[in-house]
Length: 180
Image (cartoon, rainbow, N blue to C red; front, top):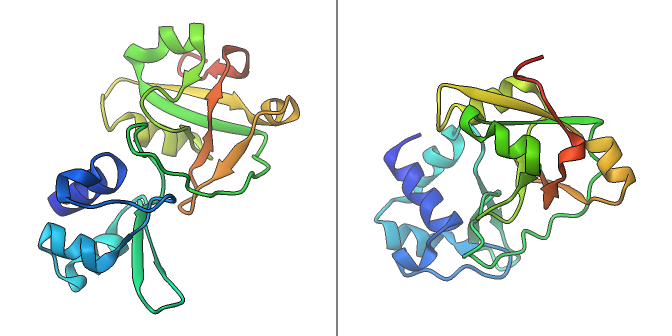
């Protein structure tokens, strides 16, 4: 990920005020405001959005013809946004990758969103491993019984870039796949 992509992620997911921006209630900001705040051109932004390996950003044109941008997910709790994602029926099993140092706490407490709005889950083990490796080469992978969670009333959402989101995953729905 480029330095500009990291900067956009930081601003849209965690600290819009650091660039003098205010997100709307759903996390959107006019593209022109983001460009002015970060000193980027529209062409540079278009490349960053298109080349982002995880489709972290969504761009939408409003009825008035203006383009707006937001982070697809991953907002810290300090950024008050509602992504306005409808509930979605998850696949039977989803996966979560994390540094192995977190495994004991996850086995005990389940998956918690901590400083984010949601727990992020992947469709497959390979993606979960990639996500876990962002912070450590030693990765633990957990399977989540999403079907049982949904049947028990837990709500799931699917972000624009395919990441599955839920508020928390209690320990009874988590299986450590790293050692099996």
